[in-house]
Amino acid sequence: MKTITVSSSQREEMIDITADVQRYIGDGDGICLLFIQHTTCGLTVNENADPDVQSDMLGFLQRLIPQYEPNFKHFEHNSDAHIKSSLVGSSVTVPFANGKLCLGQWQGIYLCEFDGPRERKVLVSAVADCRNTGGSVAPEPRT
Image (cartoon, rainbow, N blue to C red; front, side, top):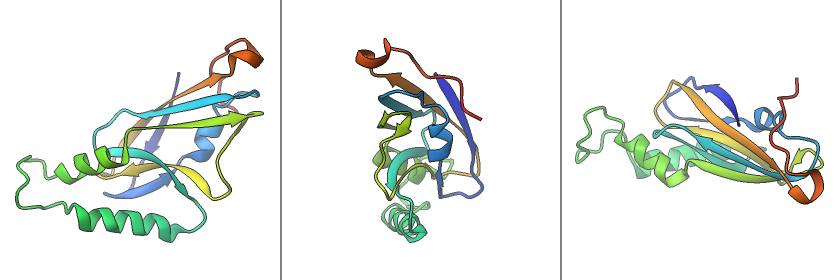
């Protein structure tokens, strides 16, 4: 298992980590499992061609779950971030073939920051298809 470190620069933003993940994929076929080790951010696969999609997603979540909802009891004023994280999710699974992530033409893997700026850790496990490779695990990252 490998770790990707991501530094956010805003309270809420979507950071494309696709290229970082691709570096941990071996040459064969398999699945890549990603897990975020935090409770105020999430992971998602979404469109990477038009930045308006990310803006729309963040804007909708901000309207749906405002930071200063008067009924929140958590004293750190980040209850909204915990809820958004639960809605988005803490993991994604992406297949890979011939050493390439099998994402659609307009898809990217995003870390969704809801309580930044912070440094975040994403665990990456690339599991090779045992039928083709004997069950090897994630290689060292490509440089």
